[in-house]
Length: 216
Image 1 (cartoon, rainbow, N blue to C red):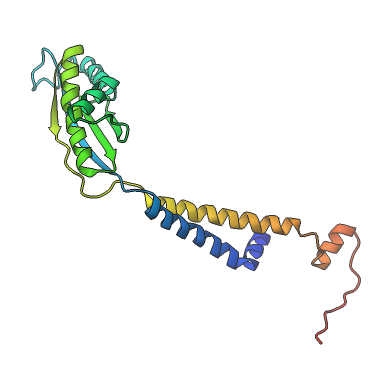
Image 2: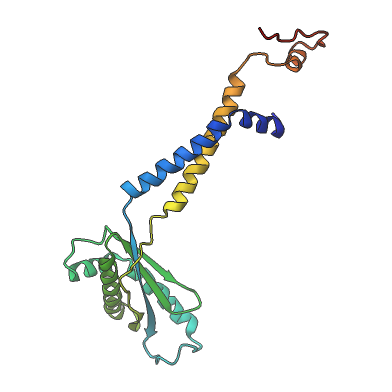
């Protein structure tokens, strides 16, 4: 099937090609508002200060070594000990209902921690408590002087997810794909001879005459 034949086929079934993607997009849009709760993300940033350094020594020759320590601290934030300490400090059973994200660049000692959940104030409180607890644990088990908070997490005012626009767009494209697949499959399963050209192709003999359709 050539591209031109496909376009002609889709034009013939234009209602289905238009209606099915719109129905899928509308259904996903309604479902995303009815069944998907808003989530909020609070972010805090920290600076790792290694023992033997002053706060003004960020450009020292031992920067690469201290960056390795920073990476270790970043791993420590998501450890069971730190998350359990945070949950206990906030009198929570666990932090399983919240998603914790940690970002640590290779060229800096700044660590960003994000907490995502359905309750905006709780996300900010948990993020700030994580920063405090990781500083205490890092000083205890690693060669770290302190983990200083640069920006405290604030209560997010707008939701960070779910991305309903993306879900709706994906549903629209999926509906369009299904519509095209249905049209093509229906055409392939139709074994009727619909033109003189098909007769010539199937039998290998030329058409020498035609009987036109007569209106009553």
